[in-house]
Length: 230
Ligand code: GTP
Ligand code: MG
Image (cartoon, helix red, strand yellow):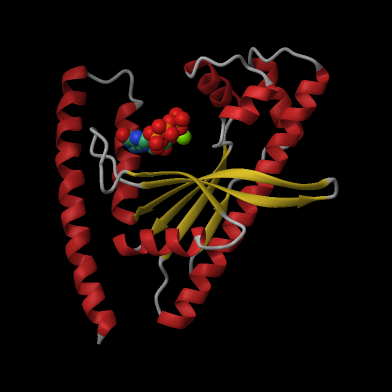
């Protein structure tokens, strides 16, 4: 059985507290708009999460195989939201959040095999109410670090009492091996107090391991595909 881990949705109080600690000291109406954006994005993530759960269940019934191992859903913290605006050179306004930020809601989909990544992508983006806004294939073209994953930004309509809006959701799709690698590499990347020489060595090793992991997952994929065919 596949599990979707839904992190606690940040409530208004939490967003308010985060905003107080940030530089976003603006009108009360701006604050309310930001809370509304978060709420809308959270609904968007729920819509996509449900679609993915349904696809996994259907696939498992039809082919006796679960493409999805598990999923995680996260909302961007307000501090990383403002950091990102600043990094991109935009002022922290509601307009800029709406125009330039498409990853307030994020879902990470961890698949069992490499083929499952593209299977999930195809089945999701073919749906008539899902629009692909951005696609980066870091499996075809791994990052310099060795990082591999398929990154998508899609939009999905969210129906509210006040009407319907198209909401962006960021989706990272990767195998168990790629996910394991990314967690460890992330840990290394944010260990600021570590010995730089050691970090350099670990980074070099990790880059090589990313390739090795990919080779192993490709070969395991071949065994699995062979077994599925017979
Ligand atoms: P943003 O606008 O900042 O999102 O830039 P971008 O769209 O170019 O971002 P990118 O496609 O690089 O994806 C950003 C996310 O991917 C990060 O938040 C990480 O979760 C993940 N990621 C990207 N590169 C790496 C990497 O080298 N190591 C790890 N561990 N994660 C990475
Ligand atoms: Mg991003």
